[in-house]
Length: 540
Image 1: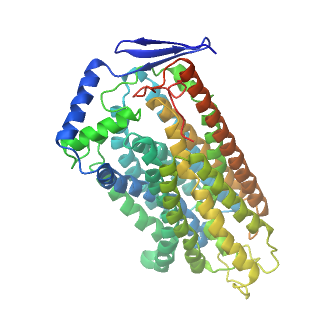
Image 2: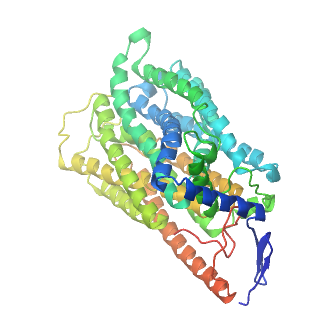
Image 3: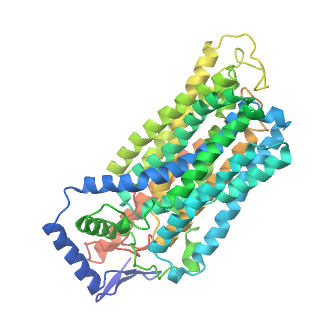
């Protein structure tokens, strides 16, 4: 392939290969002067170290965003704890109705994804990274506060219709929280520092699931206080706290990296240059090339499709465990309060493993390999859970009924419970590299936003599957049908991740050949660069 390269002064680099044209905006002369001045300023008043700057950024951004997602995850998973505490039986709700209530939550959240996507893209030439950050700054805390008013409403439930109404509004106000936060973080950190931060965010999910079990075991003891059942107090206490935090969070989130407090001018210039060199748009740098054509192009790129499909597969497993792990543990023969506590250790292990693996993935820039390893671990855990003989397992399907006499330390029970330490960490540790991989390899900013919204939507669709296969279509304690489906999904993740690594590696090599044939060795980068440009290098 013969390729010609024409360099247009201070405006753009245009590369043609006969089939397509790649046009990438580079710095104007004013930009170069500003950045040169910034670099000189750094030399005169240089920050102590880059690691200290990003650590300071962590202290400013991560506590608020992580707590927001922690509370969101806590709210999603506590209905599973309430189920074990007698919520379902006291309201007279069948397994099918319980699954449908979970589906309503997911579908209402999905509808908001679509509406927000239309809003973001209705005037693309006016959208900047600044507006994206401001949308997160204004909307996400409000979403948390409004959304978590719904759990308080759960405490007043008297029938199935009330449950459906509460779950509908819960999902409606929650929609877009996760992709919005991931997009927000992707505008604050360079590519190779992103997965660890996303992992810290996602560790909130596993910690919330663990904390939910501990909290539920304590709160359900309030049964009868104020004339309310224990599960009602579970919703009340969690809901009141999260409403207050959602209102306070508005004042803590900065609009943009360079507007974050406690940074010196030299540190702000360092951050600006680091993000600029990594192709991340900053405040004032518009993404004028974004059109509806670019919006739809995000849906046909191979790596976007493969990551989104992996999100669907893993979303089913993660959501299923968040909602049903207390029920699964209860199916092994543990009583209600004991089942709450026994669901904690797998999630605690998950939080630690997720952070360690993400640190290594950032250091070596290997997202795909991380996903391949953890999908293999999850596959092994699911295979053990499915394959162990059930003869010694607790067989009473009523979750709140008194346990039959049996040995909870039996071989079958111990092995099945031990398998949770593989399948829970394995599936939860897949989510951070999926988000980081999609963010790293999709540009410019608004195309990245579209891809992240697609990933979140596909994960939600997977959640619908788990709500039914674990809730109504697969009988405890074995959950044979559900485990079989989730096992097939993990194999699908393995195949998608492997195929994506191979495709990205081949595409990087092809682009390198094109650049060499063109006689241009230096790689041009900068804000606005599209990921389908020959100058763009994919992260594996």
